[in-house]
Length: 162
Image (cartoon, rainbow, N blue to C red; front, side):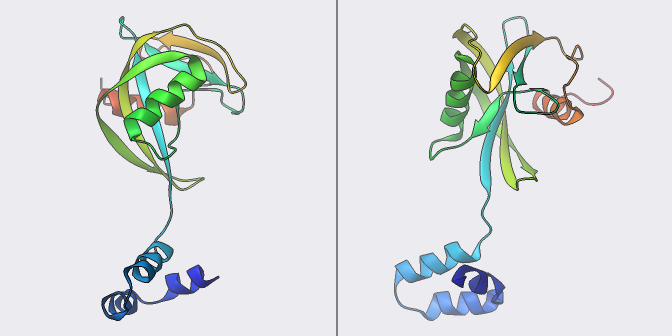
């Protein structure tokens, strides 16, 4: 309840209180309580040695196919990505380059989109992922949402005219 009250205060009041109130702990608490909170997700367009794109069939989605990813858990983004993909597929991957940050809703979150390369492993289905498939760009399975195709395009630097 106090958090909601703090978020309603004008920003200039929060700054004044931060400058004039003693105690770093109280100040840090006020700043934390006044800021929006976001979930952080990591996603990747993973390719194999042929350049084919890894797609996963999720058991819990209405449109089941999509790229791999998951939620961060107090770890670096690249470590989170590599862990999530291993947990979901038993594949070892290597995240490449820098992430592309994307804001998404429902729930509000920041997604860090990477390119990644398949290193090794044999797929093992589980309660989240029933199947995997490596596809050439544009040869998508039925049930791959347009939003996932857009993420693939962004990660690969493809434009509509490509």
